[in-house]
Length: 364
Image 1 (cartoon, rainbow, N blue to C red):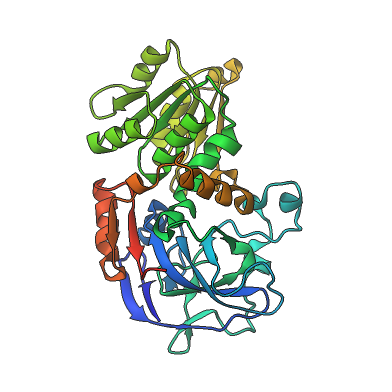
Image 2: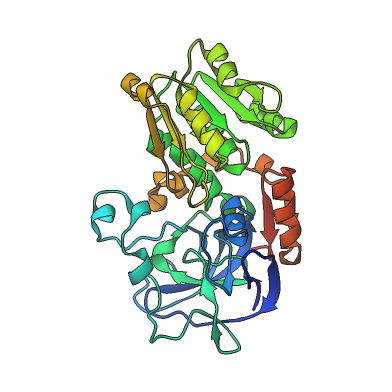
């Protein structure tokens, strides 16, 4: 099958022919229909997070089940599914405590063992699977606990976005921060994840939703999706601007960029008792500084892993929100591209030209 392979770090992706195995116990073979280009993949390509080479990247995807292995009862061939990197074992302390996104066993129990044939290979050499998925390929072979079955009425190019960015942004609002009706919210960064956080705040009933970015086109899109105010970070002090709009600071600030400066700004723009939730992937080794005395005001700085999701529950609900018109996803797809255009897609992302580019392999 055709796949985009990362052979060196830092490096671009190379389109190659590789081999994929047959589904073993509890494994599912999926025909990939759509895969979103997410900033998380870029972190690994640039070496900001460690990556094993060679590997097939990609983790925000949707497709159609082609075959299932033994012991799989949840899906069958023909089912439409969304994949999720928050694969879960179902029995560790995090899973049984209701935090499957923090599963302790995913990297040991949901992978093939060294003595087994690899899921992906190239001329007899193992090709590493990325985040249990590797969706920049025509097919995926994954554990059944890394997917969720969805309504076949859902367009798969939009469903792919739910596989990471949408769930991360909505979940940060709904599950991590638990935004309440009437509260004030600021979102720093209006890419796919930030726009989802803006929508989450709207759906949760926030009264004031402040979108912050340096790209006018993204700020316009944020207003379409529910922002009541916008702040151009290239022109003003964003912390001061947020405090002026709200009369002192927000109940909730969401950082969706992944930078030291913006994470610190998210904390600085809080009112007393407020909570800053860092969604972005801050590079390994980066330290975040806050003014310690502000902790006496009961301000909180917290992280969010994939929106603290329970994706088997959450993603079908997000699908329903889209089908009923409450969740805007069409507007988030800036471009549809082929697998061969993947490096161009990442360049568009680095230039800030798009909300989301989606690779289309075929139509379901």
